[in-house]
Image 1 (cartoon, helix red, strand yellow):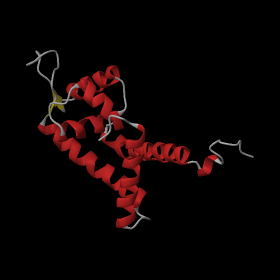
Image 2 (cartoon, helix red, strand yellow):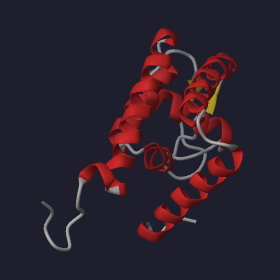
Image 3 (cartoon, helix red, strand yellow):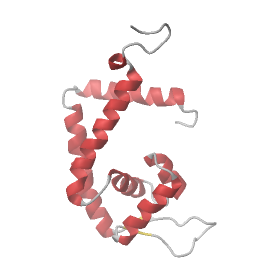
Image 4 (cartoon, one colour):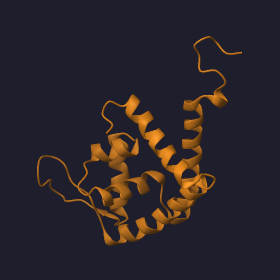
Length: 150
């Protein structure tokens, strides 16, 4: 029995099912990345740095849904592995822009392929038009709740 004005049956609540999908997706990505010695946060950081070179720690943290402190740790780990380089001194202000190395790009290529396979499994039951609609609908949900989206 649901309360008046409540979300009703959680199995039919969009927010609950969306969180469930995100959790299952992250687990599948972790499983796919583990043999490569990479975490989802490391993969996301590499992908973003490759697509948006020079991103700040704050930008990377926001885009990967972790704290700045956590992203600093992720970057340090990537730097220790030789997948990312950062200057010792900031060229402007305090930001130390990170760059993906050749080895980091090679690792990213493997990881990106594995993550694409996970995404394809997730979307396998949807025709291309439904995939586009799902993406547009999710983007509309983000825009409705995030004043900074867009």
